[in-house]
Length: 190
Image (cartoon, rainbow, N blue to C red; front, side):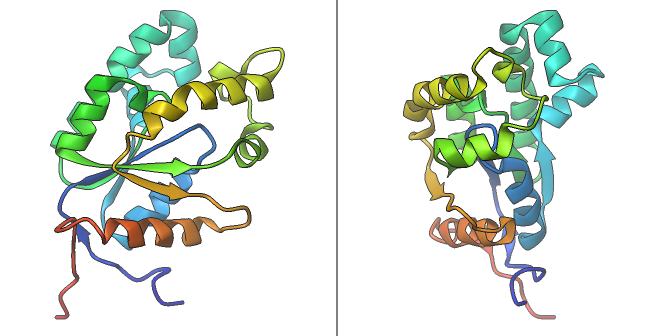
């Protein structure tokens, strides 16, 4: 189908996907990077690679403040590189420093999903250190409520819909990105 595998254009600045765990940042980001012929970079993966530990292990050994400091460093390095699609951890956009950096050097896109969509996507995963609580759905709900004011500061908001495929969400993101002047250069025919 047209647009699913075809290149939609090239990025002139990085697109940074923000939002809650389970919002689709990695899956949509991967599809988006293919549509925009750009690298896909996952800030959590880059932190894990540098530390040679998982995010959960870093949280357990060094605590959240240590992790957040490494997250900011990695984010800045990724944003200083060639334009690409960057997926961030759910807490990355809470930091005013990170928001300023992202909005100055790239374009922030909030993948907005409601609690039920998020819960259906994360409830069977044990890789979420913040959800290792007695009532993980309540924890997720509380995190979402606390983080909404920060996510609302994203430059672009794209809402998830029940049943929308990853490719469909990626196409929805591209349509929003096209509204940003000069962000996507059209592919020239050879």
